[in-house]
Length: 232
Image (cartoon, rainbow, N blue to C red; front, side, top):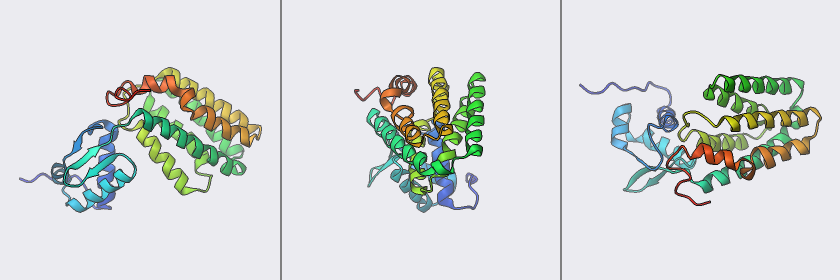
């Protein structure tokens, strides 16, 4: 008896993409390994077309490389990738703060304060997934107000590359506590209506590889395919 397809009708390409992203996030497909197209197609009960389209999107986002006649390889996240992504995200989020600044009012600041408190409680409960969700939501407050959908798309994709590739089991508690303190400082600058200072803080501290380097090293040393093969 043939395996029962596990996908329903939506956009097949989107469903295949979501499935592969979850496999990458969970670590069921690891960096440096090949994706078996025949096996994946059979398991999902789809033809090669939606699978190919999903893989093309993953390639455009930097998750995989498609080699003609050789297959699809999941890209390894290198130290240089991490440095580059921090620089890009810092620059883009800094720009987003400036563009969204006039729209960040008392409600938005209150929302960010509540998310920061939620992050603190999540850390105290050792719930990294909840912490991560609230962390993303806090940044999304001003990203969603910046009026630049392409900027937001790039930032979100790069964050997935950094932290869902795969999602590490556990976290560096000292890093998360430092990040909460940085969010508090960002909120202080926003309350004081210091737009340039807030934007610079996001770029030069919160998303500075140099500032965050020791935490980054601790976090990614847990992933054998990351950092260990690349010199600093």
